[in-house]
Length: 165
Image (tube, rainbow, N blue to C red; front, side, top):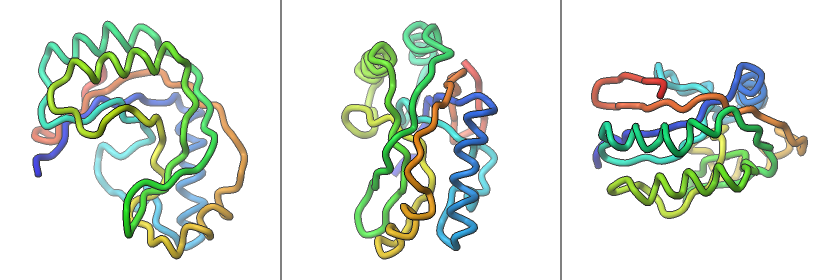
């Protein structure tokens, strides 16, 4: 399977702090956490799309459709599970309709986008055993948080380069 290029929305410093606190809570509870991911590109983000390749035209469309809407406030609300036997634990985001429409329009114009539709979320942990999910939910609590998304970046896994659009 090819490594996926991605366009990702990034929160401001305060939003990064909110997400990193969740990562730390999971680690302190002895659970998997995104803090365990040592990659240079690992930072709190919201994936707008992932595809086997992205071109300059895709970056231009992203700037025209999405970047113009930034900064934008989103609400990190419920916790969701993605996956099968082992799951990713995520905070689902309530996003303004205009942002959702822009991302969906962008996704419709990029070839071979991974996954249908768009479920805006911030990943807190990957590959968690289902038996540990209850402990994770208890540790994370039930508080909503507001994040301000301020920029859009492109991740190129072939070169290892992250570019702000």
